[in-house]
Length: 204
Image: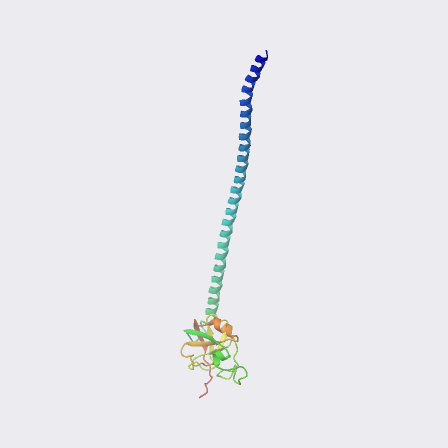
């Protein structure tokens, strides 16, 4: 009897062990599947987030390009408008025009070889006190008092000064500040002679 029971238990064990092992394998596989599914969901969330970011960046770039385009178009339109206004204002009023070489100078030693305290510091060749936005130096063929419009400037300039190197189509524009004069440098601009002055140069 004991032997029969023993055999029955042994047979039951042979059946139970594979079942338990299979159950264990199933549980492990199921857990791994859940982990993989979780990772897959996280990856899908990440992909969705990245797609949203890419879409937002594309929209931002598109808006930025449009904004820059609109800004430049507005600037271009403003420049055209100023040119039109200038032409309307001076087209029938100037005597003639030419392309000039425009430079800048100050009352300082670097331009006039005069220091502050010198009796003629800041005094022009015509005897006036140099003033930014008004005073320019030009060749002697342009009498003192000649009214001049320079492309790019809103001011109406007056020929009040001379310069040793200011000959022909060269114009020297007066600046109060030496840094501004250096920054302006040397430029080609359209010059409009509005009215010839009647001033006379002193005879040396």
